Image (spheres, helix red, strand yellow):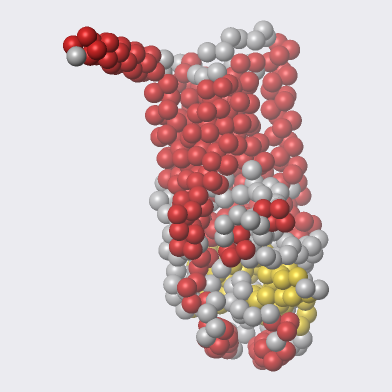
Length: 524
């Protein structure tokens, strides 16, 4: 017995020594420190958004992220970026499964974790470009290249059919004075400004050189005061056009039950008729509040037309539309004379919720047929005249895509109308994050926004991004106020795609300038 136990004891002792040695190597190599800082970066970035709204945390979190990248090889930077990004998005997207999670049982965590891992990969890819900038660019310009790298991949993850444009860093500054930069370079430009300052802070911490950071801060302040002074939204024309957003507050658990249709019709008609003395020119209802195929319900359609005529207002009603066997998430627009003026069909559907990319060959997956809505994409970049101003309708998810709004503004839209059903997300951070995004759309295009949400947040947003009227969650109410013509903006002339390509050009320019001037430095 004794003879046979000695090798086992020796093996265990050797394994213990190896484990201790491995741990010592990890600790002394700085991996543990980098992982800790990356985790803190992810948490800080998430804290900058609703509900915590610690806007300063975005600057500190980004600085921590760039600090880890500046000290790492491209491989390590990629994994650190992915790790930090996954933490950031897992926290920021925690509201994704608020209602849907109850339907999928053990798959509920995947509703948050899968998108978080996918979006986190974009942060990892940004880290690779950042390390190239740190290696090849002029030292004074390397942080500029790193900031551009982060913003470029924020743009990439926010466009296309599978784009998820939530949690852009620029959105976190919606209620700060720095939002003025969005009027010139959009939310991506605001993200770039934030990341530039953060990258120079990190550079100072690593290289112990204050001058580049001082120059960056002085440049930022000069740009800020120039942008603020020339910002048309600071002094808009006095608004005179009366508008309203109706918030019926029907819970998602009740909304799609058979008895809810009559409840919704009665409640929304009653709240809308209460506006008679207000004399609005435009009244907006939330997304799909009328839970039937409205174009196949002539009695209801006629009732809503008469309601619009009684107010002498344009009435926008969220419902369902079926054409040629295809189902659409739609807005029915009734003119002040009571006629159905147009039907706007949602262009950008929520992937894996309203539509399932590749459903024809992935339909065997659990819950695909049960939970995915099966809507079809609309194809009209609609701009519609109204008794108020020509307006661009945006349904829920669409309002997060600046490129969709850009097309409508270029077609003559002078007012943005957002109709959404944020009841899916209860009292989580989701409704607040979505409402924050609307503020940036107002600033980017210098336009008033009328936002109607089923359970809140509804309201009216001025071109400077401030809510002049704002409702609370879970209340039956009507948000009323006045809007005016757009103030316009530089970004409205440039658009998000131009800004995206400008950032790519900036990054390439910074890299080429370094390659032409200096020899590559060894990677840390």
